[in-house]
Image 1 (cartoon, one colour):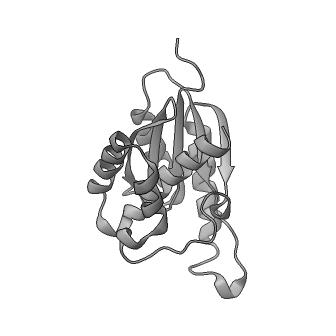
Image 2 (image 1 turned 135 degrees about the vertical axis):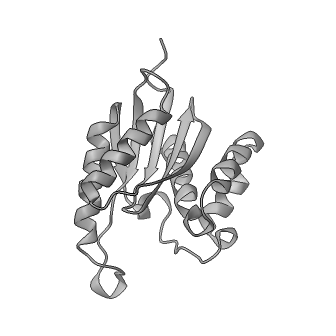
Length: 172
């Protein structure tokens, strides 16, 4: 039987694409991006949950760490504030559907501070931090996950790996 502390699944949830990172015994095993073709947030969440469950080792439960939306003051907010409601629904379905022994939520400011996304991944501070801090074998797995994601969505993969790494190194 495998220890409950073995698997951590980190998720940068998004309505259109979600970055994920699976850690085994505190080591990045795989990461990537999931996209859904469904139209409603509920159906997208169900489709994403099925895909996430397929990533997990058979019969295993995980420690689940999910970034939750953060409400900003009106002048700093971008996009439709109602999207936060859909994203909360999406995260709720994922949390209910992925087999876990513990679930945690983190705010963006908790794990990365007030870093802005950049146009190019190479300029994104989360990516730079990961490239400097991950061991070589994990950098290869991270790079593999990035290669499989469209360039404009690679920050989601970087964020998922960043969330998981931060959780393992600071909270676990």
